[in-house]
Length: 157
Image (tube, rainbow, N blue to C red; front, side, top):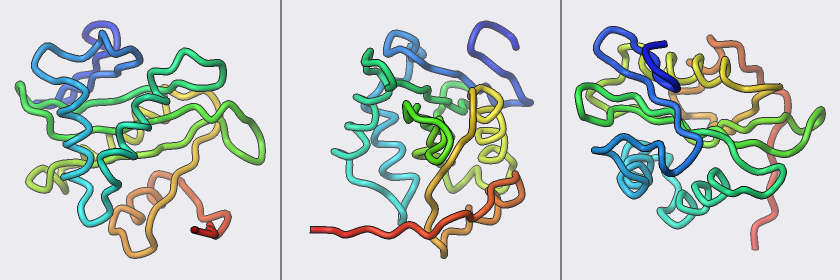
């Protein structure tokens, strides 16, 4: 670890952010929100939903919080991961890996894998995530050790 909350891997620096004041000088919250929205296509969430996840991340309420992990090449944001605390334990794991994405031009270089592995190492307790069955990232998660325990079902109004 080069400095607090920083990891270096070849030309990529991984920066852990737990508070809004910890963003690097050239990257801000709005930029990361847009990054998730654009880089996760076609599996992206709305800008509004991504913003809400940042509100939860930076909340001081008991049971909320988590961290953001950025992958930066030079001054360029090339990957990001958002891990949230669930405030639970057992049936619902302590953490949910909500978003992870790498710029398309940097995919296939192990950056997504490194983001996920670093985030798991930073977590206390178990981690869950949701992934579409047809999302190619599903294979990455399985290689890392995630298993398909339940089918998620939703009633949407």
